[in-house]
Structures are given as structure tokens and as C-alpha cells.
Length: 316
Image (cartoon, rainbow, N blue to C red; front, top):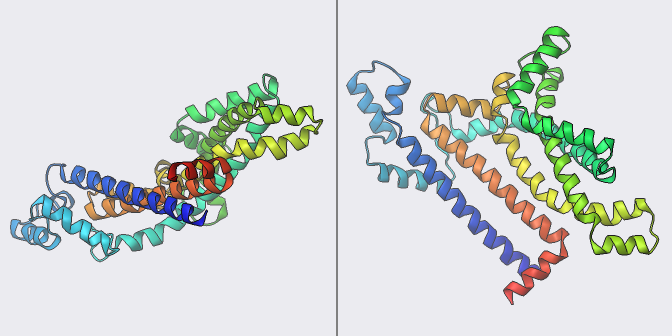
């Protein structure tokens, strides 16, 4: 079992490295496909001698293939690069300084959204085709279709302008997090409610549930011991992927509420054509995403014996 697990993890890590390399390569060449150079884009009317000196300093005067391999070599040393607009500021420091805000807001939102979403999904499945099910599904549909910026604008108008309960923008205490958290938790809540309902309804018709009912087990025991465990398995993957979305999916919210998070800094780097910051943040966010996928795969392998059995059959 341990050897099988080690082989499985090693295989996944190799896949992760390949995905990270592909994403980095695509991002690198897309950025360099933009007309002009970042030095001229950041500083207008720069003397030609000075511009050429900056290009030589940052290696932009070299062929693009050479620039690419130099950057990949730099990544293998653990260096994500440094900002062009703010010389001396390393991308690793930017991640360390700005990611805690994104993690705090996104983490609270994800926990609230997942917990309430799963509870609503379970209730909707148990009350299938009745009014609780219909109400929850209508609200879930609205939560997944209304754009985030619309929800943010409504919350700001209702709770900051009409009823000045919470501040509109900024980051200076717990009260500044309420509106962003409310805005960000609605999406996960609606998504997990729909997903959990569907998963629960699939489990209800399984043979082992019918067997448990035939044995005379109570409804509560059937739900918590048999239905929930199997219905939650598909949600494990979603939760792990959602963790990665904490950092990469909050760009709009952080911009609207002026939160000093990683997403807002990423948007600023793109508009400034700060190549190395965009590349470095993209590598970091992709790394978080593929690590989340690895964690979800390992959890599924530990929680679901059928995956382990399948794995033994494949290796044999």
C-alpha cells in the first residue's frame, strides 16, 4: 500500500511539473508577443540610450528563446524574479506580503460558502421536489448566474450607502471584511448546494442504501453513515480546487473593495506590463492550483477504497 501510494504521488508530481512548465511557457511567449517593450510602456519619452541600457540590464535585448531558457533556469533556483516597475522588489516578497489578505478573505468566504452550501444541498436532496428544494435551487441558480461585480455593487449600495453599516472600501479591521466575504461566499454556497444535492440524489438510488433501508436502519443513521460519506467524495476535489481559487479568483472583489491582496496586485502588474511580476505570480498561482489537485487526489485515494483497488489492478 505504501509503495503504491508513493508511486501514485510521484506520478502526480511529475504531471504537476509538466503542467507548470507548459503554463509558464505559454504565459512567457504570450507576454512577449505584445508589441513594444515593457520599459517604453512604463516610461514614455525615455532617451534611447537609457532605454537600451535598461533593456540590456533586464535581458530584453537578447533573442526571445535565450530569454526563455534563462528564465526557466532562474525558476529552477527558486527565484521568481523581481519587479520592473519597482526595482529591487522580488516577486517572492510580493507573494509573502500580499497573499495573507487574499488568504484571509478568501478562506473565510470559502469556509462559510462550503459549509452552508453542503447543508443546503443535503436539505434540498432530502426534501426533493418539495418547496425547500425549489427555494434552495432557485437561490443557487441566482448565485451562480449573477456576476460578482453586480453582487458587490448591490452590497455596497445597500449596506454602505442606504444603510451605512459597513465601510465601502479599504482594509482596516474586521468590519472591512464583511462585504467582501459576503460577496465571495455566495458563489461557493450556490455551487456546493447544487453539487451536493445532485451527489446525494445519486447516492439515494444505490443498492447499499436500499439494503440499509431493508435492514430497518433509522433515516438519520442511513443519511449520516451511508449517504453523506459517499456523497461527499466528489466534493473533496471541488473543495481542494476552490482553495486554489482563493488566491486567483478574487481579482474583481479585491479591486472593487480596494483590498491589498494578491489579486489586485496581479491586475496592477498586468496593466503596468511588469513582465517578471506577471510571470512570477502566474507560476505561484499555478503551483498552488496543481498542489491542490495533488492533495485532492491523495485524499480521494485515502477515503475511497475503490480507488486503491483500481490502482492495484493497474499496477499489476
